Image (cartoon, rainbow, N blue to C red):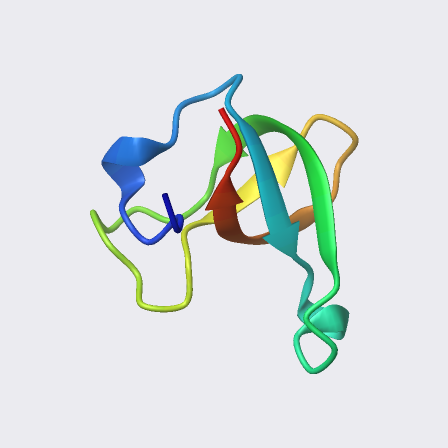
Amino acid sequence: MDGTKRSDIQVGTEVAVVQKHHQRSGELTEGIVKRILTKSPTHPHGIKVMLEDGIVGRVKQVLE
């Protein structure tokens, strides 16, 4: 899954996100979702989440 639908992501899901300062390079960071920050059901660039280690980014891949 590509992470553009909020319904695909729950707290505790393992995901790969791109952080704001890595958008040009596309560098992904993997982690576990702590909070879902995007309120809308979909977002074309990926749902914004906070990982358990405090990193905020947009989901590019759902790994589970």
